[in-house]
Every structure is written in C-alpha cells, then in structure tokens.
Length: 268
Image (tube, rainbow, N blue to C red):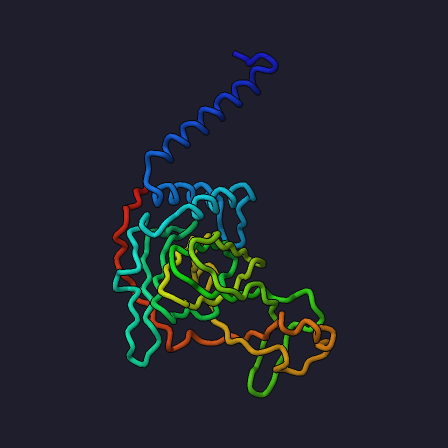
C-alpha cells in the first residue's frame, strides 16, 4: 500500500517526535555515566581515524559532559589517588578505565597536586576532556602548517616542527568541557595539576598502534631556539609559537591503573 502525498512527512515527523520523547524518558531513568556511554555509542557510531562528529553531535556530547559531576562517577578529592606523596619523585597518576571499543574509550585520570601528563598528541582523534574537580593548567598546540617556516634542524635537535599555541591557562572546575580535533583545538596538550584534580576523557577513536594512532610525546623549545628562513615574519608573534621535538615517553611519567568503582556501564 502506498502512502498518500504529504502523509509520509507527517508520519516521519511523528516517529521522530516519538523517538525523541522515548530517548528523553530513557535518559531520565539511567545513570549519568550510562547516559554518557549511550551517547558516545551514537556519536561515534561511524567513527574511525580522522572522524569528526557532526556539530549537533558534538554539542550533544559536550552538554552531557558539562553536567557530569565527580560523584556521578564515584569520585571525591578525599580518595587516596589524589594524595601527594613527597618522596622526591614525580607524583603518580592513576587511570580509571570505564570502557573501550574500537570506536571510542572513556577513562578518568586522577592527578595529585603537581601531577603532570606531559605534552602528547592525539593522532586522528576527537577528544572531549571534562574536569570533574580541582584546578588544572592546560597548555595545548596545533601544528603551524600555514606559516613560512614549519621545521628546523640543529646539531642537538635532529628535527623540530613549529606549532601554534592554542591554550595556556588554568581551568577551575566546574568549567566547560574542552574539545580537541584531529588538526585543531589543541591536538597536542599537557595537563598539570595545580591542585588535586580529576579529568574524564572521551577519545574517539582510542589510541591504537596497529591503526597508526600511536601516542607521541614532545619536548617544547622556545620560538627563538633555532635559526630558520622566514622566521622574521613571526617575530612579533613569537610568544604564540614553539618548536616541538619528538621524544621518548618521559621516564618520570608514572601512570598506574586502578579499578573503576563508580556506577557500572551496561553494554547492551
């Protein structure tokens, strides 16, 4: 049986409204972390290396993360993860694994005061970072591929690449979710805990060496560090640029895993 002209649109609109109401009812019943999980499944359903969700999906996921609180995932600053142990070593960072598939991952980094996640990249990834509590300094860069001088070499540094500073500021919870993209938004960043803090990361897709998404660490050099052609054009903006040199994973970086004890995620 065919649908009369005009009825098809009405039927589609009605079904869409029913689906929207059903989703709202479902979201009211489930825990915030379960709602986050279901939203990630929908937002990254077609995900892969280089995938950027449509703007409406980005805003939808951002909105859910903006409303997420530490107690929604069973965290508080009093937990032992956030205590600073003064032993002359870099503070140990704890990672809580919530979920991972080939499309996305959800996890929480727990940093005691002065804990540092060194400058690193997110190749081909869209990343949402939500500061759950505390104060964190974020410094981030994107590659400066649109300027005259983009690479440099010297006797001491085999190769460095020019990057443009995107963010260099303290963030105090509650604050808006930070979002970075494969080639924008500060794809390479460093997190430094000013106070004890926790940050929930959604990575789409997650790191994967076989798929070419390897985590690379960088050493930052000031703009004046290397003499290169074309640099004079950027002298007035030199504070907004830096040279980034690839490095091995820093020896002082200590990240340990711990069980996630918040509300469970049901994958169904």
